[in-house]
Image (cartoon, rainbow, N blue to C red):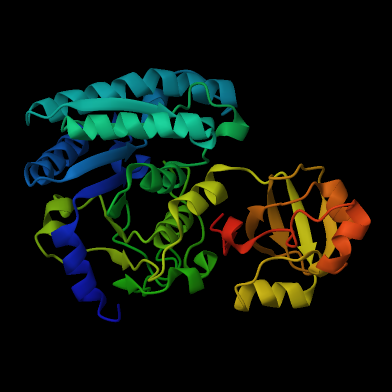
Length: 381
């Protein structure tokens, strides 16, 4: 995949299912929801839909649209007020999309999600079936976080995160993230006017996102940092990302017609399984396993499972089968994985050889504390 230009052209030619995310900074102005932007987006997506593409749109803008409607009120930014603003704005946002797409003969469907909908395997599969049915009917699902009811621990944080998780659910071929910037810059362009927009990021897993971006847009909840994290997750899944301006008129059609706009983020050549992706990103770790330097090196470089001998410390009171975060001796996260043992059992066998497990616990069900097949390194979070 050294020739990213060829790779980009081939993906755009062969893609059959595309997930598009658009943020508040693109959709809204000082006057509220910008209906001209909504109309242009519907126009472009309808044109791509006519080419035979399956399209899923993840759209922000509900809270911003609601705030504009009730701008005369004094808001302090507390969660209940944000949720109330979302409840007011979401209906207006969806109404605008319905009317805009209807002009091009397209049917839209609203799907509101919380993190719990993706955390539960049953609800995840139900949602996947719903998406598949809608796409079979040639409808265009429009997705947003269910801000009006989601409590903090069930929030995705931003729609970049939500979009990256949906890539796995809908099995998309391409992720397009529409932003207020031209693409990803080598430095913050607000602070460094000479910063260059990158044409391609060949290995995003080797990139430190915070080195490229500082700060976030005023209207949104994410910023370029969250877009790079989302692109990193997509790359692990084997899905390329295009981060491109949503402010430029008809940028989507230009991209599919061959214009080299935005920043192309290459996927990993060896993608992780969808099961491992769901495990790592749809669950919250219940505890931490700290490992010594030898174990850290074996995990990072050797592709090994984690053995009890390499464990130095346990945090949390998790059960067998729980997702845990694996930390090195410096407190840096190595990845996540499913623990074969309860925390209390690991505390008894940590630092011991696998041959000693049966003598300590009475039986040895597993020689590994965390098996490599149930582990993901370099988690984007």
